Amino acid sequence: GDLGTANIYGPFEAGFSSSQPGMSCLGSSTVDGGIDTATAELIISYLCGSTIKLLDTCGDHAKPVHFHEYLTNCLTYQTTTPAATAGMSSRLGTAADGRGIYGKYGPGGVL
Image: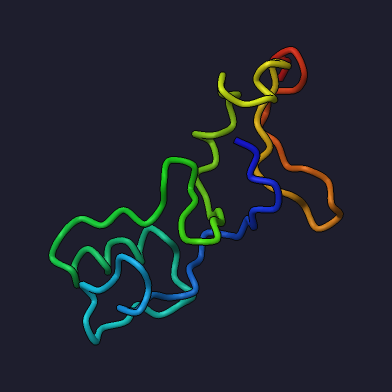
């Protein structure tokens, strides 16, 4: 659906600790901020002793939802959104100037 004003960041994380939802397995360990999401995921998986997936299919996670990378999987229009009825990509977020950030398909499914 329309994510409205979801923040879109670069590929670096702010860090993780056991106080964050789903991270209790870290115990007293922490993952420092400033590392890329893929490395953070590997460190957390190692510390927790199991595979952890930080980012959803669209490269988003957390509450409130925000994006880091892998938006490619969400750049095609989805049939259940209002944008899809017009044949265009869904809105992924909002730029600092207030304009929407959409996938690669314009009206009518044109690239």
